[in-house]
Image (cartoon, rainbow, N blue to C red; front, side):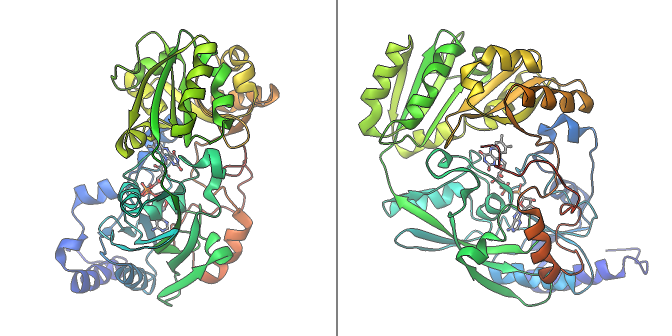
Amino acid sequence: MSAVTAERAPVVELHDALVEFLGPRNVSTDRRMLERASVDGARMSPVISERLPLGIAEIVAFPTTAEDIARVVQEAVSRGIPVTPRGKGTGNYGQAIPSTGGLVLDTSRARTIHEVGDGTITADAGAPMAQLEQAAREAGQQLWMYPSTMNSSIGGFLAGGSGGTGTIVHGANHMGFVVALDVVHADGSGLTHVEGEAAQRYVHNYGTAGIIARATVRLEPEVAWRALYASFPSFGGSLSVVREIGRLEPRPRLVSADTVEVSAALPDDDAIPSGRSSLRAIAHPDAVAEITRLIADAGGRVEAVRDGAVEGAKLSTLSYNHPIEWLQKSRPGFYYHLEVAGDVLADDIDLVHATIGDGLLHIEAGHTVPIGMLASEYVGPEAVEAAIERLTAIGVRVHNCHQWNVDFEVQRTIEVARTTDPRGLLNPGKLNPDYTGPQKGSIR
Ligand SMILES: Cc1cc2nc3c(=O)[nH]c(=O)nc-3n(C[C@H](O)[C@H](O)[C@H](O)COP(=O)(O)OP(=O)(O)OC[C@H]3O[C@@H](n4cnc5c(N)ncnc54)[C@H](O)[C@@H]3O)c2cc1C
């Protein structure tokens, strides 16, 4: 590093200390690396995109073990330098952007899986969810919950995500998924092991209460899932069966459906025919016959039933926000979306679509009520607020996802962080005591 001013001296010192113990290949101040470490999937939100860039890292470090994650945090906070943790950077709304600069702690090289036990798996924070699922399957088990973004990290999913494949059975927010964590506080205390209820305090709050260095999460017995693709002449057909399929015993792992327009934007696949509404389920093998009957009775047809874990995982990557991402790719800069829930989505889709103005819904059979992502033309942030009001008035539950504040157990996180991060150095700018919007997952 060059041009050391008094203000920059701590950053230079930190850089030198990190190079010393991580080695030069695991520390960078290269401009392109810093820029890459300072963005996440926030471009998905036109509301946030208009405000980018929101911050730029001064250093990015790539520790390769949980112990090194603790040491990196200690080196930074002892110099008063903020630390923004980062997994794969796939979060959608700017939560991984280092809004006050400082250090980005990229965990993607800390990916060791330590143990696959009976009902649990333990890995360092950067281990990709796909790798965990694979390891679990080799032991006759499967993850209790995982996101549709399979390459995202376990640390990022626990700290940033809110649900995904498994939500239909276990509910949103994956409470109960976390068994134990090794976390790092900004007080120089190294790795702290927390279990059960104490571990839940680090979930969904973007590292603001402590950085997850290692995680033990729950597994369940493996099922030989079938990836079932069906289609209907119109979205109404898909909507007429989505809840019933979701409630069938043995329960499916996922049920998703899309309007004809959203279906057309999905990746090419013979099982997603053009001009029809696509319905996809990760189905229990014992339920395939009953699902097939329900679909036929509702005027649809089964396009394909595919075996194997890879096929099931592929259907996960066409769920939650992913269909909206495909829709956005089909017409760049046009759409925004809202996270929505409620029976009205399936009961009166024409009203829902009309309320948001030419809306397009992606729906999932949720744990209790249908959940979904509702897209429409983006004409500015005020119109988004107005659409939320109108949707709420017709009984749609809405989560305005276009913001990066911690929106889950905010007061609890503030209390915890008072001790664990007294100087507010962990992911600054995300823990806002004035946040009053809906809580993550509360609409589901
Ligand atoms: C198309 C699309 C679809 C998506 N669908 C889903 C979905 O189905 N379900 C879902 O829950 N999410 C979904 N997401 C959001 C996101 O992909 C997930 O939350 C993902 O698991 C985040 O993992 P990551 O490794 O990319 O984390 P990042 O984006 O890197 O980080 C997420 C947040 O956690 C913090 N963080 C990262 N690592 C740690 C750590 N070790 N300790 C503490 N804090 C940390 C970051 O600072 C940030 O605030 C989707 C995203 C996209 C782009």
